[in-house]
Picture 1 (spheres, rainbow, N blue to C red):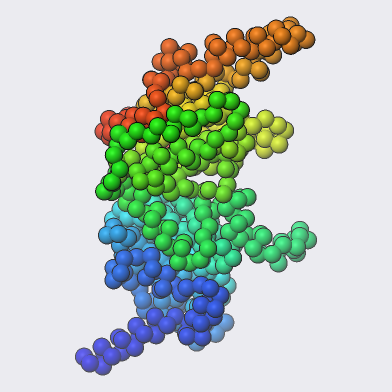
Picture 2 (cartoon, helix red, strand yellow):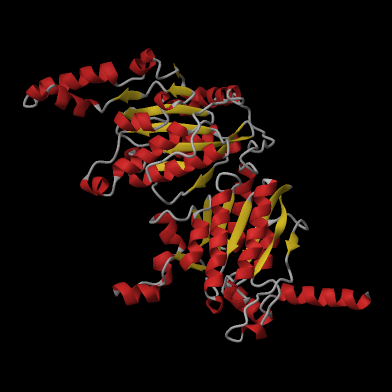
Length: 510
């Protein structure tokens, strides 16, 4: 018995060393943590339970039978984050470059199956050189099995990917199907084909960082939802995100203790919107003043900044926020902002997270670039996302709500439950100048008459009252009372239930 126990401990020590001390030192030298260090940082102290520590690959080609490291390049198991169950896999770059073999993939599939069965989030820490070439199609089959699990788990349990090293080729498609992707600046990258292949095929010279680094994917492609300075910060932020999310689609988001009063009055909001309708203001100020303790977790902060998405709490309960940002492009909707917001709205609807929409939108961005790149279909994604959502929805119009963009931004017509407007709200087809130039085309050459028509139009339509008369706005509220009103609205909607027609699934305009 003693021999067996000693053997067990020796095997465990060898498994924990991964690819050996030399490779661990090299990993640290690159400013990166090891797979096990990452798991320890992510989970509560002492909560991690590992699976399949001694699993090895079964490849006998190319001399692979001579090296069979325990664990096969991935650490898998379960633990807790602030006491709540999560499943984790962490690829180990020190073991055969973290490459994916058939058994490596099998380990990941095992914990993903368990996550779906037990209704708990899956967090994947990616740091891999890609498919293990020595295994050929077996490696690709392993990837395919993981992809199928990602699809099955989508909308059932939250899936979070943390890219902490290379993620290339087929490997990128698993994170792409998860709910959130986070990257680490200067040490992680994602691309379908690497710089060498790009050079060969297109003769473009590009570095790995330019092609698929954290800055590229958070600002240009929108593949990643956030980028952090180092491994430690990234894992701390993942812990913070998990606190906002429910464990699965049958549970409500967690309720946290809060130290803020639901009926808090904010007099400063009365002067947030400038007198001049063309002067910008920062919508984030409003979000922070509505949130419990001013805590706001922003998603995709660096992409499509004309719209803001993220999570706050109202009375300790998670609320998803979508808000136009007048500071950027006057808050217009365009292709990028519509895609960003639509995906966020659909995530919230999957997991029963109520939606708060803050509206100040002058319309859709005009131009050939937008039309040629399909703004019609991309704009329809946001329209579709709001229209199919069945979670509690509260909308506050702070200033402009013009044209089709008014309808798209969680209007009454898309089944929003509570629609409030500030006294500064303008719900109309378009701005006074554009409208009068169309209606009074005959007076275009008479500036005085045109100015008078514009003033008349503003008096008639540049206010929230026409929409209120039609019942499209439930009430015009004082800005200072906004937190109190939305808190009461969400409280009244906690038992909301909507019956929709049976369908296999919808056909969102992708």
